[in-house]
Amino acid sequence: MVDLVMLPIKSQQKKVKSVSVLRAGDLDALVRVLCNLLEVGSFNLEQFKKIYEHITHREITFDTAEDYFYSATKWRLILKERNGYHVSRPEFGILCRYLEEGKESEIKNLLFNLLMNREPAFSAFINFLKNKPTLNELKEKFNNPHTLTTLLEWATWLGKISQSTIEQKYYPTPTARQKSLSLEQFWRLFKAAYDRLRKTELVGVRSAYVKVPDLQDLCCFLKELTCDEFDKQLRLLLITPPYSQKIELSGAPVAYITQEMKKKQKRRHVQPSKFNDKVFEFNNKKYYFVAIKEKGEKYRDEIAKI
Image 1 (cartoon, one colour):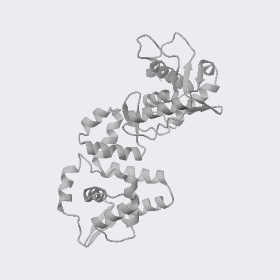
Image 2 (spheres, rainbow, N blue to C red; image 1 turned 90 degrees about the vertical axis):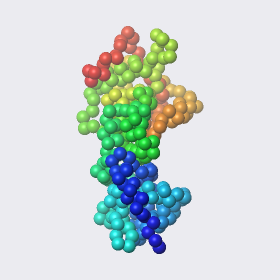
Image 3 (cartoon, rainbow, N blue to C red; image 1 turned 180 degrees about the vertical axis):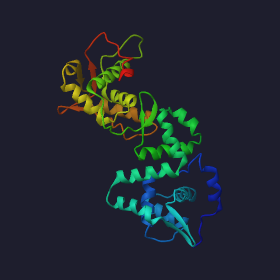
Image 4 (cartoon, rainbow, N blue to C red; image 1 turned 120 degrees about the vertical axis):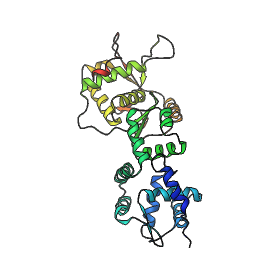
């Protein structure tokens, strides 16, 4: 069988080496395909395409197969030999063992480190997220739409990108910190975010209740908290006087919550793992709204003090 990987791939390499990536967004499929090919020995692009279609149960064009194939060779997961190509056994053998053992987090951590070291556009993308860019700023920075789509797909699957629907900005997904905010620090953050979210479309009119998912969204964005950290701190407020006497929770009809979730998903360009849109649970009850019962206080400048 003739090797179908020709010179155009090499010419592409110069063009995309540092400023763009090929359209190979499904990292999960690529891992499963390469693990299937690990024991095959030598193979070519046509065989790679057939295995990809068998594993994913979907047909792809040769252009798409070439994108995935080239990406794997660029990252040195596929190596050239005299009569064909083979999967890099020492390195990829670890990933395949993780796949057999169902260790998804280990697979993602290994691939993340690999992409950071071997894919310049991806490392530039992750570093740019520290600026908390808007979608338009991402488009301006990574002006090839196919490149941006692929980078978003990679970062989303790897769990490395979050999006604030309140701020309409992206940022690196927070990791659990060793030292959490003190309860007083979290209370000031909570009040500041609450006061900001109380604004309505009517000038001078403020809502008494705000949505807990929106509070979570804004607090996590402002101080790079995880969802679990937010929920844990809020539960601590609710059992700790005097904070507990100042907070009032309220539920909402299931139909309303479902409708709100659908609206949020439409507004999102990616669906990061950080936000799950679940209602807040406390004392075996579910809540969707929260109010602070204090009056006459303004907290807009409190965030700077935290």
